[in-house]
Image 1 (tube, rainbow, N blue to C red):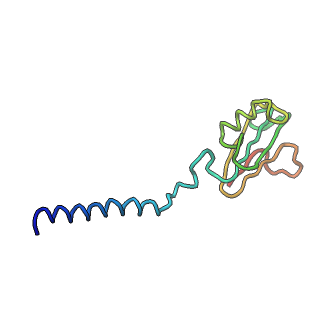
Image 2: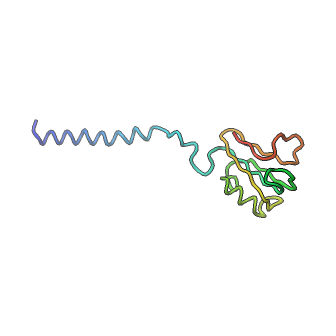
Image 3: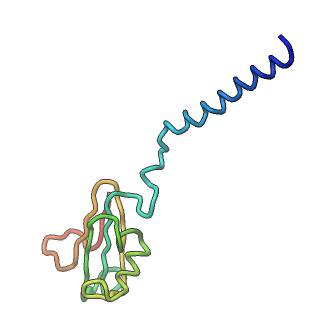
Length: 122
């Protein structure tokens, strides 16, 4: 085998390895793929209220737990929404946000059977 043949065969083998490695990496789905984007879950909840920060003495409040778009996209969006006049009954002094992979719920202080005032996600 001449030096020229050795280099040519090495280039073919090296070129094949370069081509195979990205194809193998692209088949694998990253473990963090579900957590990418603004909200790490499939559901989100945003709770707004006026009263004390510890949720005592609530004078007015608003709950929403429908998806992860708009003001429920992330914690900052929820807070900004609550402090604006866009929130029904707003603006509000306080906000609470969560997102989850399976279940999100929100209860107001006016809900008769609520065991929770605020948000809960799992």
